[in-house]
Amino acid sequence: MKFLSLIVKNALRNKRRSLLTITSLAMSLCLLGVLIAMYHAIYLTEAPANQARRMVTRHKVSIIFGMPVYYREKIAQVPGVQAVVATQWFQGEYKNERQDRRLFFPRFAADVDRLFDVFTSYSMPAEQKQEFIRDRLGCVVSDTLANRLNFKLGDKITIKGDIFPFEIDLTVRGIFASEENLEALYFNNKVIEEWLKSRGSNRSFAGTFTVLADSPDNVPRISKAIDELFANSETATRTESEQAFALSFLAFIGNVKLILLSICAAVTFTIVLVAANTMAMSIRERTREIGVMKTLGFTREMILGMVLGESALISLLGGAIGLLIAAGLCAGVRAAMGSMIFQLQNLGMEPSVLALLLGISIFVGVCSAVIPAWNAARMPILSALKFTD
Image (cartoon, rainbow, N blue to C red; front, side):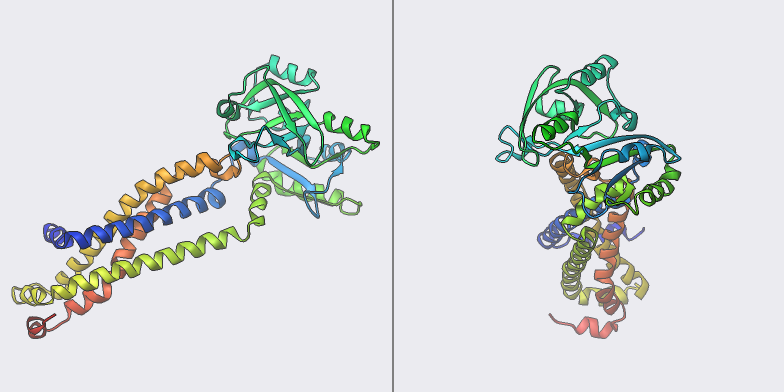
């Protein structure tokens, strides 16, 4: 610590070069910070307590295929199952959604009398719940969605169907709060069943069944039991935790985990090269100065420590600035994509992510300077004093 002032002065000796290096490191570590925060939010964040008890059963081949609605009663009889609700993704278009994607929000048809038995984290006044069940064309929306699109009780919401090509006029009968901070709209799945009957089809089906287990520990056992129940039927199923089901949609993009890790590795390697180039130039310019320091009694270890300290300090400054920018970008990504990718709703600079990134900053600083610092520390005094750039 007694050489700290000397380390700081040497690190900022060439202010223009130091500023450019710190800026480069800040931008690179900002990108790295956002990527690591996304990886942490998607793959390492534990599901909330209520979500950890929920599973989703879908068609084994693909989610685009439906399942007979009577599966619901059979699933309910599996030991450990507390409640089951059938749901169907409606899609459709709200207003001019295709031109303005800010108007997008998830829309589901569901068993209105079972919805809140499964989604226990949804809270809504009892009178609103009763109105929702009573009104065949009623719907409920999350408070997050209501605040964003200014929905109020009694408002009319018209959705033009595409998967189910008919227009549906819904009335907001309730606004529910959720600790999961999601955006969603639910309406009565009997609306879809009646439309199918009007087209001559008496087939009732569900896109998915959301199942509530009595304990998170029983989720794997119950999932296996449900799939074994329909293993030999014409419509086999696949059951997985709700969190795993949500992550499966990312697989449509590709191997997101590998993509994130590859980009992080490439960015880290680039940062090391940038910092190494800076330190190599800085040490080369001060070769004779290092020779003078050795004549004054500075040991190899002292010189090595000071040079590594300079590099670590520059890298740490760049990292700190980059993390501040990354925190702001995470907030923007969370606001823009939180309604589409559930895991990104809690995207942010968690303490573990901050610690990792600051550690990477120091690691980059040390790695980038270790070779030029070692060469400078072991250079003979006469060679250093004779050196000319």
